Image (cartoon, rainbow, N blue to C red):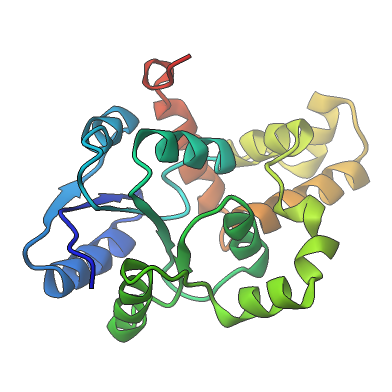
Length: 220
């Protein structure tokens, strides 16, 4: 197994964070475990390009943005492994989106410590780790059929997500954006699949991350 010097755990959900930290400390007792609370903290630790680093996220920390933030992380440290973890079942469209964004893995059902341990070991050893439902769809070519749903959110989906995170109803969103209720429902359905939606609180948490976004952490 490759020696890991640092594990940065950047998460919003406290249960997911606790389960991940406990597992990582057992699996990698010599590694420095860092609670990455902001983008700037993460970027600071990634700048040491000699370190082998695991960067572990829940599905909330990066807000609505995935692909371009992952590209920026990798530009800072090419030796790093980027992993997403999830408490409970996998939403396939989110898994496909993460695969499309070149994450090294998406480990679900982490309440089973053995599952998280297996996923981390596979990735540390140089492999990738995704739920079976995602691997089957990638292998069968179904990923290409769902290409639109694996992209980043469209402008309209992004707008609707923000309104829904504020508690607006479909009718209120329809009025605010000047589109039909049916159009709101269609965009909302696609958006929910992309973000791995499981409960209305998901959008509230994603909006919180959007509000915490620090433009100074992005360099041109």
